[in-house]
Image (tube, rainbow, N blue to C red; front, side, top):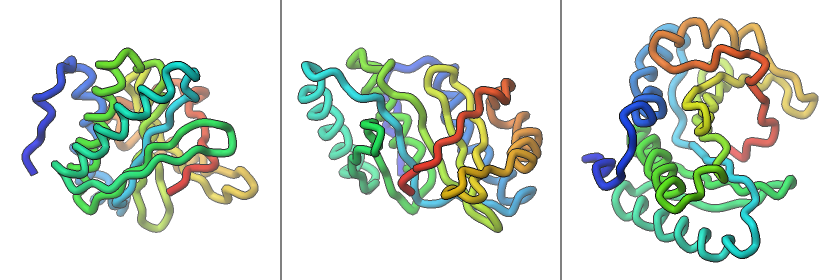
Length: 186
């Protein structure tokens, strides 16, 4: 599918950061035997009441445009902490990444950039890996939950993955800022 990124004014740095996940797919398959899933999501802070309805309408209009353009299915869910998840599904990983990119652009264009926290991309193989993208920092970090019910993560494997991918992806260097997201709904 031809990208419609050109509709949005974005800096090259921001584009390179988020879209770097597309370049990393081949190396993750070769070195880690991990493949991208058909799921991604964006975690959004609770919106203030007076912005909520207008913002939600803008988001829904954009999700409809994305579905019409890319056939990326989406839904909006609230989690138990009051945050909003914009969940997307598409068998074509490039379309899925472009959908996240476009939504980030919409938030930025409507002065809502501070509301979006992270984008999340799931990879699967012998284990499940989430690449979490901080929109604020323009950096990724790995998250490998081992036993989510016990809130255990595989930190050693996360460090290995980050080390392997840091030449391709902009990886957050400060490990203390690799915050776990235990209740990712996909």
